[in-house]
Length: 419
Image (cartoon, rainbow, N blue to C red; front, side, top):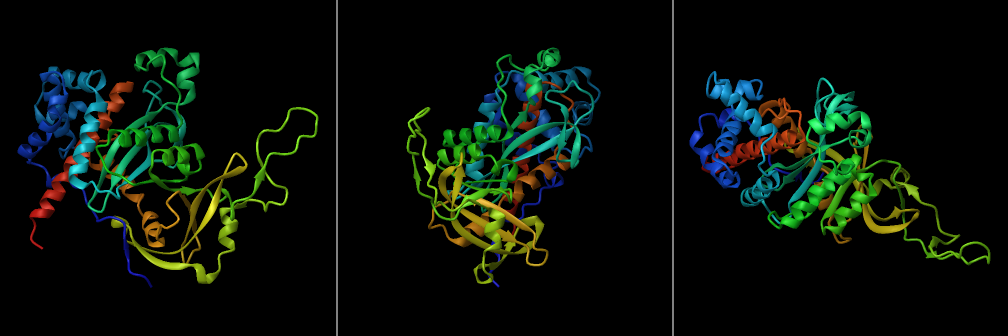
């Protein structure tokens, strides 16, 4: 059996460890304070962060103000306005955040993780809310759907960015016109799929040049979208994405040619695989052909998930793009040695990439789910009561900053502890 392969160290988050660290939080807030235009915004940002990091069970605006200030209706209205309608720029705040992530945990082999996280909601007035599949509940329900980017290195992990998914009818159906106006959705707001939202975040991180990264990991909700995969490749990053078992590939690059014109109709201009080309196969069919000697047993230490034993096989294949041969990629097969449960991945990593690296990447997506769990249970990620477009993004931005404050504090405390 191979040596256990580390994905990332366990980083248990607990706001109880930072309760009372007012001085440290004030110093942390000073990093971002100059990016808020007015004094009231700076004060409210610090107050909101303190509230998210407090031991309160529910962290919406009113309980936070009552806990930190006392009965003060003006303070409640001020903080509600700051989050819901404030004019401060999330993009500037987050770009500074990425630079701080680089200082704390950045490395050349860093991984950008993308995933969705949903928020059950009552009523129909909150921006983007609709009856749709809700991952938190595991069924269709009235909810808002978010798409998030996170960052992982050998030192730690945290969240980077967020986007709210707007169902198409929210942008096109006349029945939603009044709600669009109330929620502050711009008239020219374009529709974007969840993979498109994820790609936009990845592109923004790469364009900022403030955070080193090499990889992108994603589940099959994103991996099945070939435009997303090709978009990641165009940024210069290497994706490692789970894909459905019915994803089709060629085992060898097929020959193509433009069909001979028959003399009738439009002259062909688009190449097609030649007639003798072997058909594509699903990745599940490829797995069935892997010999017993080609499987490698490995232990993946998936942090808080504990050690995971799995069998792996990898081979180079040719991806399919519009029924034509696309890029040459890695097909990575991960199989549970007892249950036989199969996971399939595609990666555009170079052909010389060691199998051990691909095995490690298969365990590098779980930290973003841990970020969601910690942020929802401990940092009030789902406790917001705002309904507007800007309010949702403002709240999530501040949750991201609160999460990273705990990460930074944990790392600092760890460095001070004796071996």
